[in-house]
Image 1 (cartoon, rainbow, N blue to C red):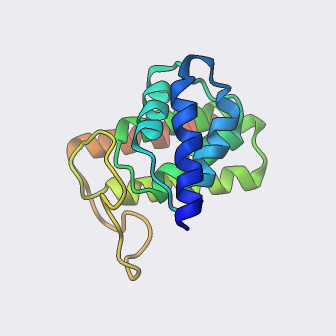
Image 2 (image 1 turned 90 degrees about the horizontal axis):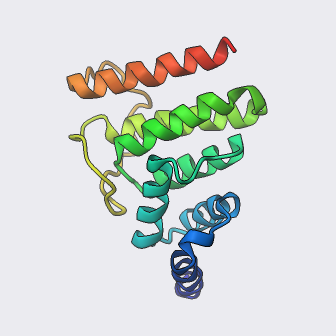
Length: 166
């Protein structure tokens, strides 16, 4: 609702203003809650994406990774570099994860691959950057992708296999 959007927007504005002091473990839950409500706060998402990619925000739990993946994919974010870092973090934390978190994380990574499959390599974009039709099959389903996309997918799969062997 508009009331939810205003409330989330106000909270997000305050979070962005406190950036150096952020406790990132609860910001993942905030971003997820906002995505679930359909609220898109460009400045907060851009800040979180930058912090995650730069290593400033090193994710501590498998749940944080899962929440960010779910939120960014739900909002249609098309930043391959961000998804690559999140996939790497998911692999790093896999030994600590519950099987449900692993399943949800893998599903979110698959969604990220679907969102980015037909797009050029891009940075963070707003909601609606890509909305798959409801009849679109899940997975890449024969789509080969560009050389960059194939290399990225191979890297994600390689890190996933490596994490499974830990």
